[in-house]
Image (cartoon, each protein chain N blue to C red):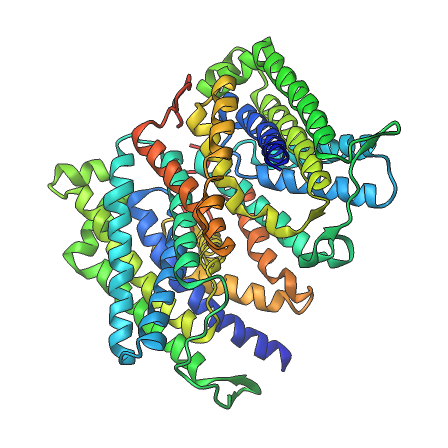
Amino acid sequence: MILVQLLINGFITGAVYALVASGFSLIYSTNKFIHFAHGAVIAFSAYILYFLFSVLELYFWFSIVLSIAFASFLGYLMNYVVYNQLRKKNSSVILLIASFGLLILLESIINILFGADVKIIDFIKVSKGLEFLGAIITPLQIFIVFVSVILFVCLYLFMKNTNLGKAMRAVSDNSELAEIIGISSEKIYSWSFIIGSAIAGLAAILIGLEQNLDPTMGSALMIKGFAATIIVGIGNIHGAILGGFILGIIENVGIWYLPSGFKEAIAFVILCSFLIFKPQGILGRKRGAEK
Amino acid sequence: MIVAYFIHLAIIVGIYLILALSLQLALGYTGLVNLGHVAFFAIGAYVSALLTLNEIPFVIALLLAGVISLCFGFFLSLPTNKLKGDYLALATLAFTLVVYAVTLNWTSLTKGPLGLSGIKKPSILGLSFSSNFSFFILTLIIVLIVFFIIKKLVESPFGKVLEATRDNELSARVLGKNTLKLKSIALAVSAFFAGIAGSLYAHYFSYIDPSSFTIIQLIPLLCIVIIGGLASLKGTVIATIILVLLPEPLRFIGFPSSIVGPMRQIIYALILLLILIYKPDGFFGKVELK
């Protein structure tokens, strides 16, 4: 019974990680650098939801739409103000260090605006869990899984069928060739930030409803999202979703054996081992790490 | 009063100097994007604190802090040696996070979030460094030793090979240099000095807890190394002094202390972004970041 409960918990946390990872992976697939500040976008929009809904007491659905729009805008802005200037230097390390700087910058701004204490978005009251195969699951958790699955289907259809999705895949495969047939890669970079950050906004809402908010939640989530993408191969958007679920389940089953404080460390260890022994991931093509 | 404050600042500058110079060895001279530097600092601080709390003399604790950091640096470098650029950055960043998680959760050893308190001020052969001024002298001596060792190192043939590895690893290998071994040594030596800095930090504040060793601490260090310029020791020294002192006036403007901390981070993060956009090779840099 415990195992079933742990698996279900793992599946639910996995859904959240998969959201983080898919947005992050979408941005990586076209931009080809590690956008750490993605985690801070999640943290910031969760705080915006808290501000709109719990402080200003706006309608819930209205606050949700505004928070997602805010996340998108923040992603766009970072790309426009910082990354666009740095891209000319043609170095993924500069971009990585800059995104790390942005992560700390946003976290500190959250810290100043909202304070370092934890915040709670009190939307769904704690309700009695439902029994499912002998495990307890709350309605909110069902909602989280439901929303993320819908989003993953939408994302798949979007990448597969729309012109923008196809253009993104083209730039991700080979940006020079894409330029030749008239796809502006600069526009596509921008669009991936807008869409990827919108997914981050959605993740922020689901996380904000289930957990407390604290200013540094972004970096923790970022590492989880990154570990999830590394498991399957970085830049593989659909794989990232799978990776998210795998990570969630490993973490939750892992605390069966380890003290719960080490739950955080599991993701780091997975991240390190994959980076070192299999940097292309379980599904990825062999390229990247040792180029 | 004001003199005591300046001595305090000078000690902080000294500790940062050791950290920045050693990071310069890895990042500037060898081209390793090492985001694990704070972890070595933490390891040094904890090793030294735990040893002296168990009545081991300061000198031995100081050296062991360096040596154990060196071992960690060496072991970290073995698997990550072949990783390039951003992959190396991530692996070393994950290392920082693992060390942070361990200091937070291994409560029987590190007391977790409570931290270790009552770390003694150093004394060497009966000579006590308990006053801040004498501690400053000790820091100054260690900074000078570290500076000259690193200076000699980077000017030696060994240092030149490190730079060759940074500029073009393949060519260096063609010339018969074992670049993997060189990179391991560079990272290990850099970790050694970070451990020494950690030891000084622990003994100066006589209290350490995991919150002093988060990834946030990397930002000022990266700032210093990039602003001073890669592969420039002079630049590093100047940048350390300026950047460590820069946010100090915030204390006197009268912000509450809960704002001053994040403000410092904002200043460093903004400086880092601006320097990356407008002057990515720093003020005295000899090579570009890549």
